[in-house]
Image 1 (cartoon, rainbow, N blue to C red):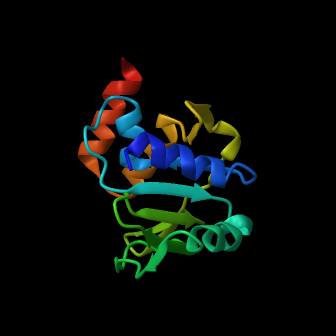
Image 2: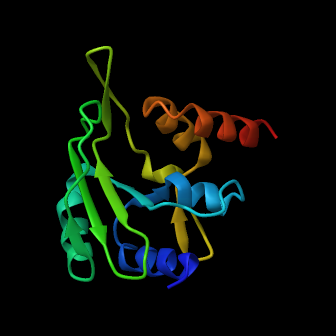
Length: 146
């Protein structure tokens, strides 16, 4: 399945929930990334279980990667043959110098384009800074300044 079709299918499946697609798929959408590695899907904590259950009907649940600095309250990974993996997250937080730093998802900032619900680039600039991804931060800074 091609990426746009997968993102459209996913967005249609989740249209009754506040959510947004970001990460490398957002960079792809903005013309900043040629080949996204996975689908980063952010939702509200109160919708996490319902969305995870919906995804589990058509995707296989995978073990979440271990990162001691990534302390997001709810995180799940899903896969499907021939499609990008999905990382579903809610209550995003990281440890920085031993302190928990939380990030708040604002679904009202998300926007629909081509039947796909994307998060704004400014939110992913904050998240990439939080996740200590300096190259992605610089890419988005240049994009937002342009």
